[in-house]
Image 1 (cartoon, rainbow, N blue to C red):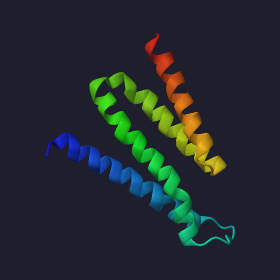
Image 2 (cartoon, rainbow, N blue to C red; image 1 turned 135 degrees about the vertical axis):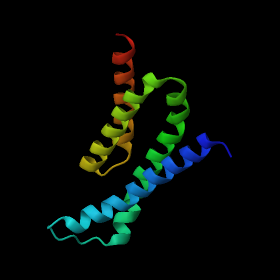
Image 3 (spheres, rainbow, N blue to C red; image 1 turned 90 degrees about the horizontal axis):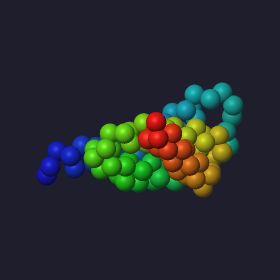
Length: 111
């Protein structure tokens, strides 16, 4: 197995794990009472974890070939995370992160 495939698998697995684990930790720290259980929070985060895993898998070969794509990809991840945290929907954050990636790519490559 090549080291690139192993590194990509570890990266995708780590991001996927964090997107499933962190909402559980954040939920327990919040002081407001929640009616939803741990299972409901875990199931709510599967969508964002899947999108991020797909984003990492699709972007890593492009980033390895052209390092100019790293910053727009990070912008896309940031917009995805923040907008999902605010909306708790998966559709809007996915579209916003694609838009943010495109705008960042356009601004950084036209300079």
